[in-house]
Image (cartoon, rainbow over all chains, first blue to last red; front, top):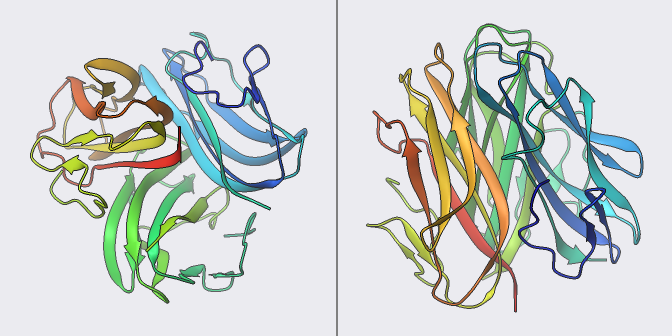
Length: 108
Length: 108
Length: 108
């Protein structure tokens, strides 16, 4: 991520792009990872504490920009770490145009 | 859906994959339905009480995995049923990698 | 947008398709813009007060319907205007099947 648009509470670590939950609850996460000029297939996993929760794919050969998108509601414990992992392929242009959002839907 | 990650309040019926609203309000729904090794075009509808609200499409011929994604805010009455319907095409690999999320944004 | 499914508080201007924030806070916005029978590449920007915040692309040549999707959390001041802008390409079929959603995640 090149820029963080919103980081209320400072629970998102810019350097590692890891969200660390400030408290237990249901969070909504969504991501759109854009590959640019790249004929590889990419697979992006949303990870919770090193376990993959959901995946998204972008595999088109002839497209200059294509997004691997997905979203989910997650039950998250305090201090759980949630982050994106590029499971397959490479992002030649870096994470430009990509987004990763998360917010607390309700506390538990 | 092969797994339900979050089902607080037990208002999501796993067997039928139908969300039944526990109370009146505005809900946010989003889905990402992935087709796998399938040259058909698929159309996925988000249904509210048997009426289609929004649609999403995935129709690429040369891609191993592609998602039909969309999302919406809906005004939902108590006991309304919200679910996904595959309007066109088939999901040869089942609903693997697909997600369907909904949560109450605010009650009315 | 041909129809507005939810417009609580009447802060969404149907004619201009502009959301005007009723109060300061963090809002979640997401959009899915569908191009129909169109070989052009489209780029859709989410604009906040005339500045682009995020972009999404759809550029497939051989697909009848494809969506440019993205979503983001935004810190929005009272009376900020948030809207979609078609930065590149044309939508030959209009905004049919496209969605644009926003809601207040929490007030500030």
